[in-house]
Image 1 (cartoon, one colour):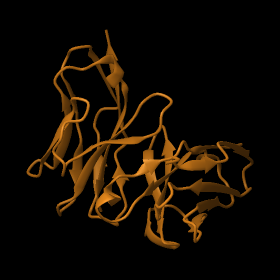
Image 2 (cartoon, rainbow over the protein chains, first blue to last red; image 1 turned 90 degrees about the vertical axis):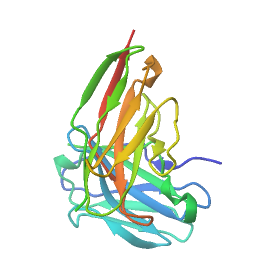
Image 3 (cartoon, helix red, strand yellow; image 1 turned 180 degrees about the horizontal axis):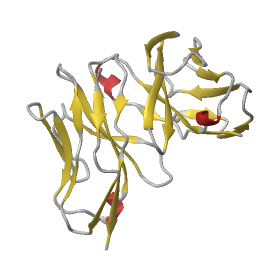
Image 4 (cartoon, rainbow over the protein chains, first blue to last red; image 1 turned 120 degrees about the horizontal axis):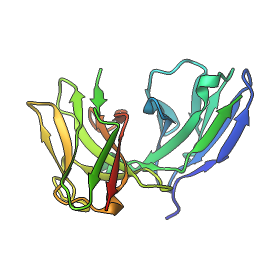
Length: 114
Length: 109
């Protein structure tokens, strides 16, 4: 099985711009979660989508949004970028039922805001 | 709200020494607890979960509900254990996975 893929892998944006990141889960996985990873805060949960619906949401401002498509692929959007949004953004997919406890992580998208 | 605390940012040990990575959580119910590991230039991956009560790569973790802890232990550290370790919690299936800030384990010879 192919693993979780994320595009692009690296991104440089300017303050005030917006950005869209993409995540393709493992085939058959319907849950996709997004995390922000920074040296100071570690891994912080952004949101989770399951069957095209946002199922869980972390404590991030409304500038951070996401969506999931019928093929389970997910996108994350950040509007009006701030310097503090510079981070590694990870997505993870998981199966359902008994196997839902394990999250499979992608390689991440490194976002730099200048 | 649930919270996961890993008090050590860095733990340095010599090869063959015992290792204990600390994890404390705050949650009033009975959560599910996990340890994830990220080796250099690799993806974050699940190491073990408390329900399975198994040993993975020589690591074990016991859930202590009285102390709300889920420490990760290994009797004899190996250099290949060097990595970033994250403790994580979720209330139940279908809820968000909340991570601690992680502990870097460095094992030297």
